[in-house]
Image 1 (cartoon, rainbow, N blue to C red):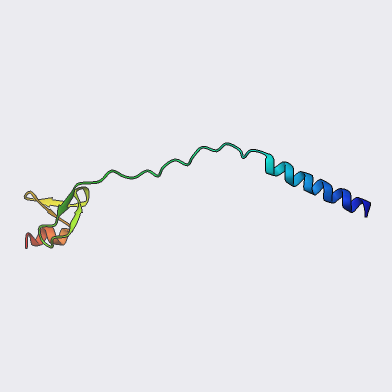
Image 2: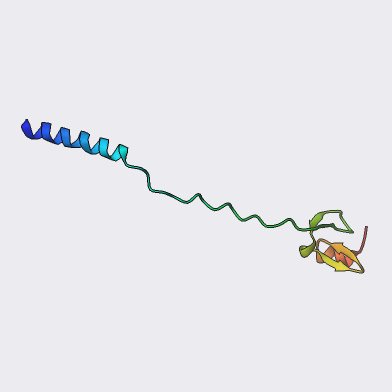
Length: 74
C-alpha cells in the first residue's frame, strides 16, 4: 500500500511538471506554393478555354486538340 501511494504521488508530480513545461518552439508551416496564373485562350473550333501553354496554334488561332486544329475554326 505504501508503494502505491508513493507511485501515485510521483505520477501526480510528473503530470504537473509536464504541464508547466513550455512547448518546443516551432516554426510556422511554410505557405503552399501556388503557381502563378497562366494566360488563357479560347479554342477557335469549340470555344473551350485552356492555358496558352497547352494550346495548339495554327494560322494565329488556338485550338484545344489536334483534331480541332485539323478541322479549323467553326
